[in-house]
Image 1: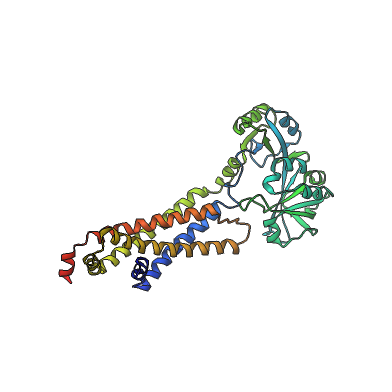
Image 2: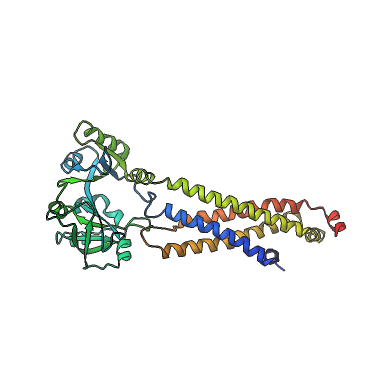
Length: 380
């Protein structure tokens, strides 16, 4: 009998107990997989750039800035490109079906965020071929079942047209995929000139500017220069990196990172105690067998390796089941949540499995190593 086969048979000597332990581990890694997928998904700040700068009003994101500030920002030393956009938030068909629309300057968007969004020059040409055309993110298109060439109507919440109608019609010119799986693509890009000319309020204003620093320019220093340029103006600004902006925005609702760490930490601490306690009971039940193995010539290192192998097997099988369920969940839920079970998350999960498998098996293994052969056989 091989060493691995012996460890596997010892693990399954009481199938119900083993299955329950694996189920506990699977639940813990299911929780970890889902929370980590959300934290690293498209609705978090993980994939946001630390170089791109977001220029917003110092009074808050709801306060617009005059479009005329674009020219002044473009003249500041260290600025390579400037884009701008205004938000047009609405719904399609029913109010619960919310669709985000960013009305942006196509050329500025291409220079600042085109690469990150996966927008090609061909897509840009299709977008600008008509004023009411839009580019739709892959996640939004799949969620709505939209295709290129389809016309969609968005009912805006707070951006009525000049004729009083809240309905905005758009033709889909293309679908962009984003640079990677963590890129948020649950929105559409419209043309600013079309929206600006047709809206009833807020003409020639934007919700913010996107600035790409020139090569070699430190983003934080450029941010300070931009804010200093408008410090005494009627519309002072607050400039942050895209990542800082998203982190601050998310923290308005909750500290997702802290919640994830607390929930996952509580789950793993509980599982650690359950599995370790069960392993201790299992070793006590097999005291005679361990003494017999020592009598047959098994060294302490071999005994310890055998116990650790059992613990690792429980965590690896249970953990892989939990991660498999997490992956299934990311595929089944809608793209609104933006769950992404990325490779770094999987690698970290495998490391946790190994670490916890060794940690829970350490105390039972030490107990088995210290088993006295004479007392064990005499008690039998």
